[in-house]
Length: 229
View 1 (cartoon, rainbow, N blue to C red):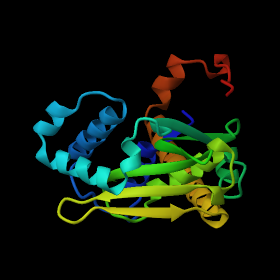
View 2 (view 1 turned 45 degrees about the vertical axis):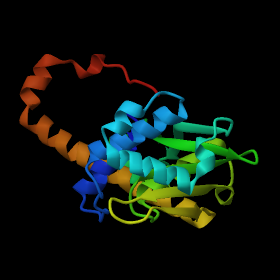
View 3 (view 1 turned 135 degrees about the horizontal axis):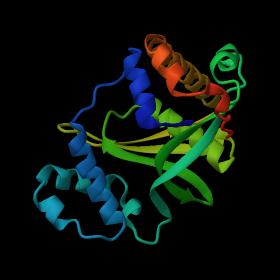
């Protein structure tokens, strides 16, 4: 599989002890907030969800105060759309590893889901969540993918973060993007792919070594055609 999602990258990050900011609330609360906002943006009823969750109601009200234009029906906002971009593996970071394990695989696809607003004809990313008002690695990956997906210069992109908090005032923060950050996050992705590849084949080699006899009698490797991308 050549598709890497944020969830898959999150597992790689955690398994390799890379510092990660702790979430402010459990995942199910984040999901309830995202569902409520998405339904509102789609014009679907949300009263039952909000009535049963006063805290979610409060956060939705804070979002409306931070960015009223998000909830205006005629505004061009595309919530939760999938964006993809290729990471070219023909890089010095991965060349030897690719030749050993993936001689026929030359790229990975990074997929993210993002809220895209069209401002003066150009895409702008929006994020709303119970989160810290800082630029996370997930934000950086989304910015990189968006620039590649829309084929625009990194400096043309901007991320608007609406950061909610369980006990503190909500904040609206704007983050710009540039070529240096764009290059840095690509290198970060290449390192993450390298870690994923090493882990996959360390596990696979251990499995194959333990079961070589059974596998040899079960399949004829000469009869397996290579699968092209």
